[in-house]
Length: 334
Image (cartoon, rainbow, N blue to C red):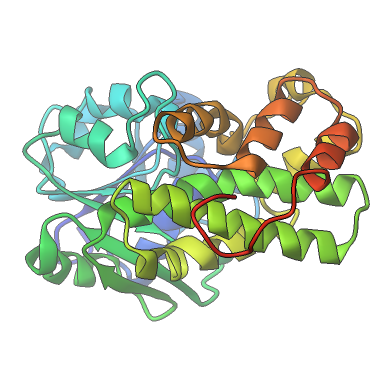
């Protein structure tokens, strides 16, 4: 151990998990990074690199990788960064529940319609659940560029006081919230909306259209979030509007890149099969649409993304959106 502070565990060595491990190790503390692939564990430990998921970073020597879940048993704080659709099964393999379980995956479980904090509470009922979400590109966090996030603590201010020293760094600034649902809603829906903005880019429809789509998408996020008990103030912050703007305006976003390729005529099936990293919005979109219908929430952009993912021509879907009846900008309906 490099000091007397408890080792923080990171569950998942994709780009985001590796970037978070690098950020946590930036002050010299020990970080334990769990990876599924033995060859990736060997590379991280021997060469301090992750050439598959985060090739731009030279990793700190205080990051130790493992593929053994038992090694995480002594970590009082674990950041869970596995893909959303696998979170429940991976957490179920933990031999000991951490005191603080920080969810860093964004999405909705497709098989059940549960948010990530609900999945985690069922899999690790003895842990206090927190959600870390905000405008974060992995390569920038790994490089130590300034980043601010929402840290929503289900355990309230007592959990926040525990997690502040574990997570905050000079270039990584968390802001406290107690609105776990709000933090999750923003992180989930923005991925779907980023696909839509990528489609606009792929169809060369211009900056005006993208700005309009972000604004109307944010209205969908608010309607959905408030129906599920999220606070509007949370969705106006880093984990909602902040994350939405970042993800909808850059090809560094996997979801935006997927949408752009769809707008350029690619098929969803071929594009998803060819990706090593997960465009989570493609998994979230169908279950988000189902939940919206269940709660009678108008989400026309989400409907449009589902149509395109289902094989409908992107230009036709956009034309249908533009042909919708005119209505007031503000209100409950979209």
